[in-house]
Length: 429
Image 1 (cartoon, rainbow, N blue to C red):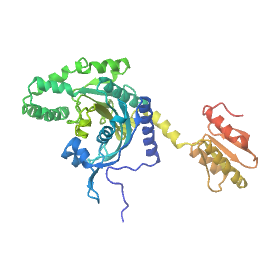
Image 2: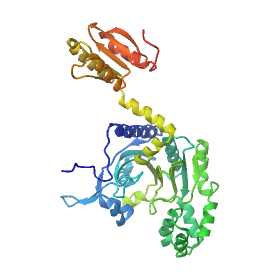
Image 3: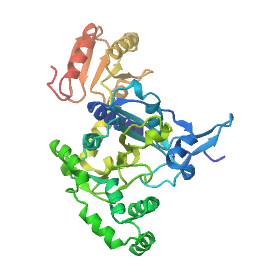
Image 4: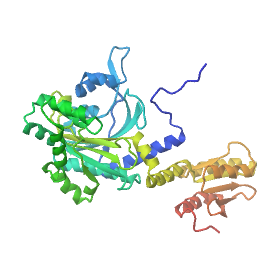
């Protein structure tokens, strides 16, 4: 019988992958909380109609959806924003505005797996609801920039590609293009850099436009456009505007976004967007059937593309390696040199762990050399030997290659003191 494999597009997380994932999660949480965001979570399984309401019936082709034994039509969430809108509108009176929430969790999309895209992935979502000012957009862009930088990705390695849906709405209105063509037009713009020019020309001609005119407008939409004035002022005051590149081809979620839109792109590896988002002022009203009209903006950052970027970017790779090393190492390894002292060694192990010190030891009797090798393999800072010297024990600094003898009743305090010192010194006598 053939061995059972993971479902296509889903992932195993062995310890090293799990350590990477946890490092990403910890960094996301740290930066979001630094910005005053609080964490929430919604269900992984939602009624399929929640996603149809946002994106239409065509969304079902991208969903893991099914009918339950109770005949409920449900889907694994492909994104979290509809759940956020449902939750926020249901209890919006209970929260002071603006609402600043973030979430980290798995999402699922039935798409062809490829580099940077899996069917199961984790997203970091940060959203602000209840404030329609450009300051909200600026806060989210600043959070996205600081999050990427926190991973050790330098400002030369990524950029924010910024646009605004309103500039295209004005463009169409000035050329008397009927509103029913807006969606088709934005689909053309979304693919303009990847499609053949002649195909784009034909599609634009069908709605009364020309590629030359569109290109000329795109070239004119620079940072001096009025749509970007407030954002530029806000981000310039923070010293972050230099990270922004105006790019009118960024339109995102064709029937979803209403104003500012942006994506985070790496500049050296040709990866998919690391993150993306913008303003979606109509979603809360849509999800509440018009009962709650609350402005909103947010962005999402996925773990798959981000993980690839961290491994390919030198500065981020160094920080990642250090974090992974710290996650797999321990503070001390207890070596039982005399089996008659195993009971005393176990008592010390428990006391050290109760003090928050990461400790491991051999479950069975082993030669002392093998136990020291295990300590090295676990990247322990110290080896603590229980032998004939008991009630004194030998504490060896495995990095500095020095050691001292301490009374067992002072062991916890001594290890805490040593851990507070730099890893390689001062040397213990």
